[in-house]
Image 1 (tube, rainbow over the protein chains, first blue to last red):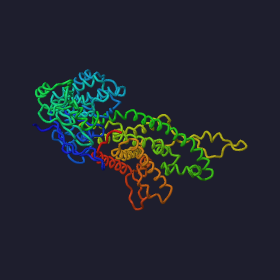
Image 2: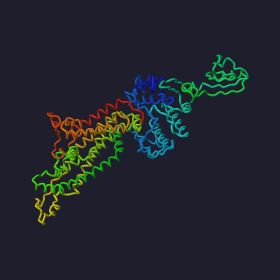
Image 3: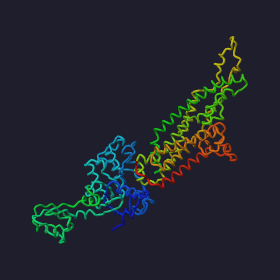
Image 4: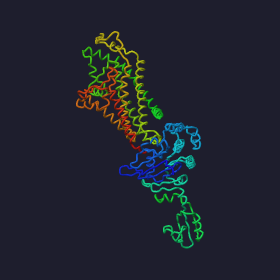
Length: 293
Length: 327
């Protein structure tokens, strides 16, 4: 496996006695899309702010392309484009001037791709930002993030205030970024969009990383809901005893991870009244740590 | 990279800069007219009357006592002569309008430099770029070095424009000549027949304005140090204004009350003496007025040192602190 592009090693951030982040370990490979999930206050933004060198970790360290995000922050940020969650822009500028200004700070001058991308995102970047709605401003900021071809894109709740079409367009842009070899780390509350684009998902709870899973593993999982004519058989598709919490009288509700053929074969031998087999998705995983979604 | 930031900061301050420069230009122009009226129309009348009684300073002494003495001390007019146009022009640099504008500009701009950027939420946008934090401080330092002289230049040009408009300062005795003694006799007051124009030149004002530049730079340095540690622009501005007002009051009390003189050198206003630089090319501040035995030092040098110290402190704080999330 190549060296990770982003590496967080036991990242901890304390404010007095309060721990905003506690021993978080995470890595992101080049070309990988990782979703950071968790409710407000779970530490997502704190983690991202450490990765961008805005705040210094109380313990642990983080690096991007081998550069420490605090002590070598400039080198690290050369490789990152960031979209803040709480978006505030220079309202005295036009969209184009903002994009140009930010590109110039990177030592670049934006080319014709700005106009092409602006067209795709359906924004008039020559309008003053002060005259734009919050959704339009977010699109301009997205444009500024997508223009530089950096190895890592970090987005803090990027689809906030975007309409459904633009949300789809953003997710499409992230897929394209991945195809170009760019890695993406983004935080979100919306499980569906994480499921759509991510290769891996990390779930935070009260500052701790409580779950890390590849989406491929998650997609292998299926939720089986069935109703039987008589009692539910004691053993499941894999031959093991069914967990007691999966069975209620003639009903079965089971998460199955295994070969599909074995499941179908087992179901074929049961006398069923009703059956539903669904991909597992993120919802039950998220619910496991954070209750109802 | 720094030049891009500097250009952006200059664009940001442009509207306010134009307004401040215009106000100072207009004020300086009017101040010349006021100087002409006082020194060539009002002062000659009072002086002629005072000479009859053998006390040239009679009216000046009457005018400047009580509360007026306090204002005179507060504004540093103590050693100035109201009959001399150049002295009166020098008072313009000590006028409350000018001092207030200088403080408002320096505190307002530097207060917004770091804390304002955090407050508005644009710091994250800026600092997510590969921009070293020290470059932001450097950019603000450079903007001060460019903008503060422009403000001083506006005042200087206002004075020159005023002098051009007003013309010679010829003492005017028309009012006195028209006075009649009881019984219709001509006035006995000593009135010159062909008074010479009073000597006036605003060119030396640039020396005083170097002092004004240094004062603004010092205030800006103190404020940016506070700003680099803060997250709310208005809080920083509040603290900075409080510090400046305390310094101003302490310096004034120190001039009026002997036991408080000791504190004057701790205030910026002790080192702000543009009138001496303008009129006598004297850049030195007599420290022994407050601290006996201490040799005189350069007022401008001290103010610039305070400004630089403020910027260095800002650099140290800002490059080490956590950037808080926007409020």
